[in-house]
Length: 334
Image (tube, rainbow, N blue to C red; front, side, top):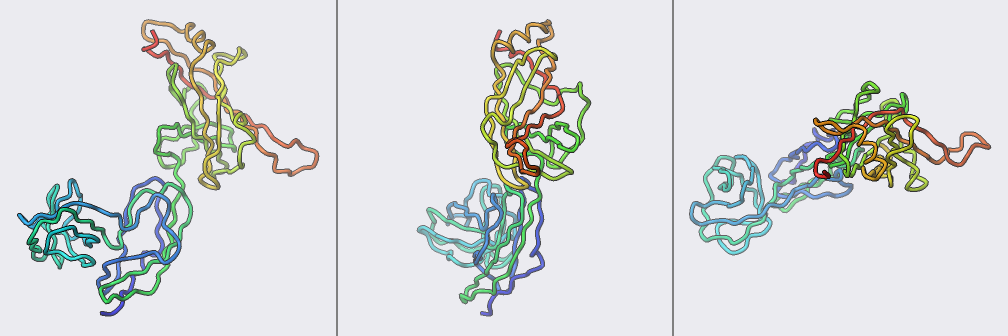
């Protein structure tokens, strides 16, 4: 059999960070397996993910709960335990799919394979299939090789995958951008970067007394994420809250650290919304409809001086515009 020839038309792929996507690589001459010759796919992506199930003589079915495979999907069995009727390293096509079962054929839409004895375990994969959600932005390059039943390997083909940075991270942290061009602080609510600040009196975060808040703060200038390097110490980035100006602080964050580098860099800031000062401030706003107020807040950042001028300090300080955080008494605190 002639060697596979990989289709290079999808040699440049581009997807947003955190978006789940999939791609089927293709080649001529029926490759049953693909391998990575060099490079790597973006972090968070899985190439030829493994699936596991069983196979039954009655009904000639592959049994895999909520498999989600469509008719016509190409699969290859990597291991078969017990049973007869199927082979490893052979291209099969899914037919007669149901929620938890399907049959396989040697051709797309063809006759079902006869399983002459039950398999207690089957492990299979989709050749040349890539899926997942990339967790890091940037450019990845990978060289792929396709192998058929010769066995014959294809020539290596280079693929380039670009992952665009997203504004929102899929975790429980509050995603926030500090725009250095305007000094505004903006909460991010979608994968598209938002640099439009709300008016000064509108709260952008909502917390309750005794809550823990972890803010994932991105520093942005002219639409690009800034990487100002590691923090000099855990107190170099602070979230400060006051009930009113110029009264004393009612809360100060207790820890901060850097995550990622380059376009994916961010800073994590932790604050615990408790303490006597906060509790006392809430007593000024007690009503039958609830106890809350919109606190004044700002971020304070101390970062390493890049050394543009002689005689300047080793570290520089920058403070964001004031913004609002609504703090509400926890109903469980009585």
